Length: 88
Image (tube, rainbow, N blue to C red):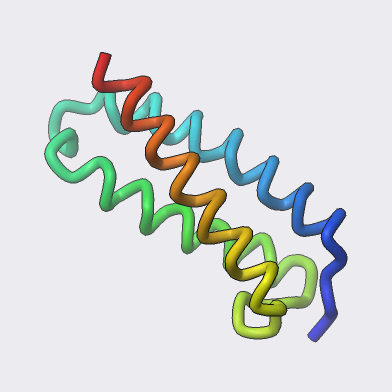
């Protein structure tokens, strides 16, 4: 496994945020899943993050606790912002 730098993690999180925005737009436009969109987006964030980390030959399990905390905070901010944007 590779140890990621803060710069690489920031790039991954920036890409992930764009990806989640696109996914949210599609999800909120699909009436069939509107009730569980937040859970769906949270699951997709986790799946996509792990896939991006694997592509960098790493894993969430191999990150420092500070990096894990940064990911958790970023995930919360992204999901909260998306939820607010699409509630209006």
